[in-house]
Length: 92
Image 1: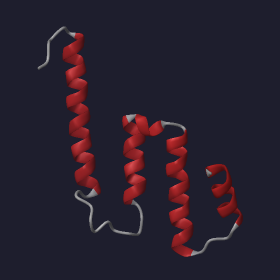
Image 2: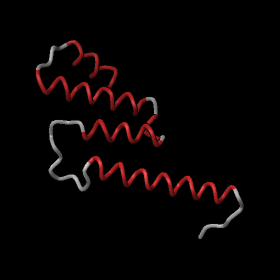
Image 3: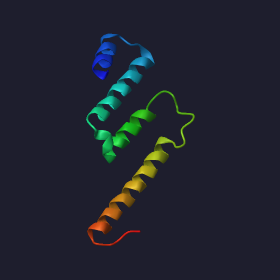
């Protein structure tokens, strides 16, 4: 589907916000295709793309700053737990 959709829309000249939204969609799909969304950095990049849309996300639970703060805290805890596990400390 993407092999058909993206070249088709690329061939059409989009105007204004539709072009910006399509560019963001293309970048997000590229992240998914390369499976970069499975890494912490890729997921953060994907979230930044989602938050860059003109639709200000009135239904979003967190702001971009709040989400990234929450994600960074999660990453610190995850790395600390891995550090403890490598040192032989058993976690509950």
